[in-house]
Image 1 (tube, protein in one colour):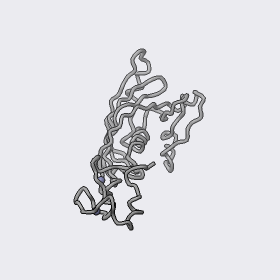
Image 2 (cartoon, rainbow, N blue to C red):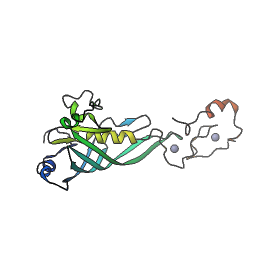
Image 3 (tube, rainbow, N blue to C red):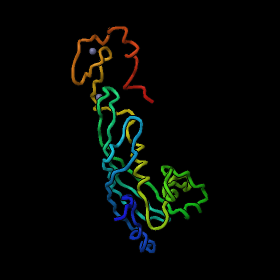
Length: 209
Ligand SMILES: [Zn+2]
Ligand SMILES: [Zn+2]
């Protein structure tokens, strides 16, 4: 097989005969699982090599395709309270419109700046977004749709910026600094050594914006 992105889907079956149909639009079920580079925000990331999964339904509509379903991926980061590894799984509902490039521009709106396509060769237009009316849409041209920008955006928007290893994480003792999930200490956490006061004033769990 050629080195071809696993996120590209041929629309031949979906659009080939379907366009002539009146009434119900054809649908295509797509299931993909592949690693994706660079899924990282401040606070967490999808581990390198981990599989991102997408179970999506592509539905042809006039001048475009609606892509809806689930995107899932494992993530890990640093717990904001105890600084240990925090992990979890993203399970994201998506529903996005893909528009044919030429058609979208006839709606009169400017084409949006492409995102996530920097450095890409001539595929930039494929990766871009279009503004259709007031709605942002992904662009496609020809009989192939690239799901990667949708999957990437969904994951990046949902990765936790300030993760917790668990809802009940006890964090670190503000006085002696031990991990209260593993050990206990005799510190009086109401009247601890004042030299630590500036540290205790640091908040790891709240007020993060
Ligand atoms: Zn924790
Ligand atoms: Zn302590």
